[in-house]
Image (cartoon, rainbow, N blue to C red; front, side, top):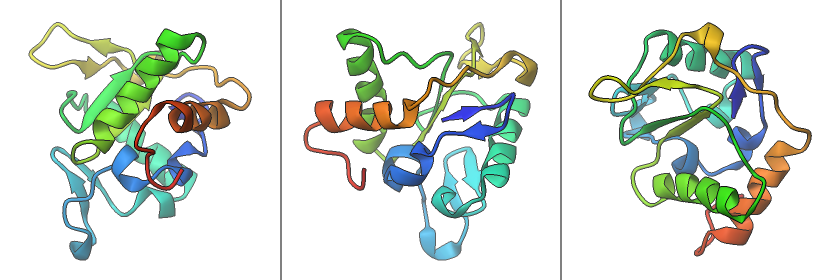
Length: 149
């Protein structure tokens, strides 16, 4: 999870298994790609500034949502329905080829696929302990458990 305005990344991207957060089509090639998305390497090995620059680039290019990319304006962890929605979003990527969830990114859905609004309209305030809360929600609600939480 990422706050584009402060370039602050939550440590969740370091703890979640790669298939939950990102997809790697051919790890042997060194080019970690997923459909229209391409990462220079495994995000768990990337520095925060490097990953933040990649996220800003995805937003600046107005990369449309796809099977591999989903934008969320907010992250809500209050209440049963919100927690189940968060778990559904994460597990949907775990059940397929993987993908990227970007929170704090409002979208323009007037075209064939939603695209992010301008970078200056992105970002969210990160609640204390949000990474741990998200991790706990996934552990408590997803069965079978997601790997490497």
